[in-house]
Amino acid sequence: MIARATVRYVRANPTKTRCVADLIRGRKVGEALQLLKYNKKYPARIISKLLDSAVANAQVNREIDVEALIIHRIFVDQGPAFRRFRARAMGRVARIRKRTSHITVVLDEI
Image 1 (cartoon, helix red, strand yellow):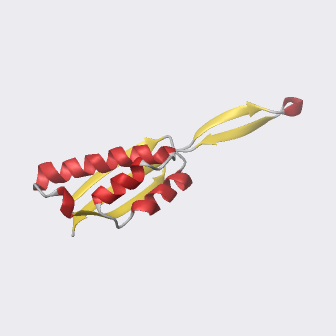
Image 2: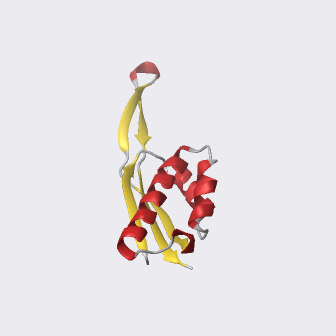
């Protein structure tokens, strides 16, 4: 493990975030950033910022060239869900769960 970055309590569904994470797992950092740049899903912007942070951590802490970095591990865990309620027919309510995610990126050298 060369560098690591984590973001917690992101207001994005973990299932949809994992789809974006699967897209870049095992790729070079430059290639992954290009894929995320043109991806239209909301979690792509968050993962792109997180990847930039992990690259900055690698440069400052280890003084490593960015071209030699790959995404060794990226995983998305489920965070706490906000519970909201919506009024329904005949005085009933329905629960709405607004889910959150914890995203972790680990970079390594080739």
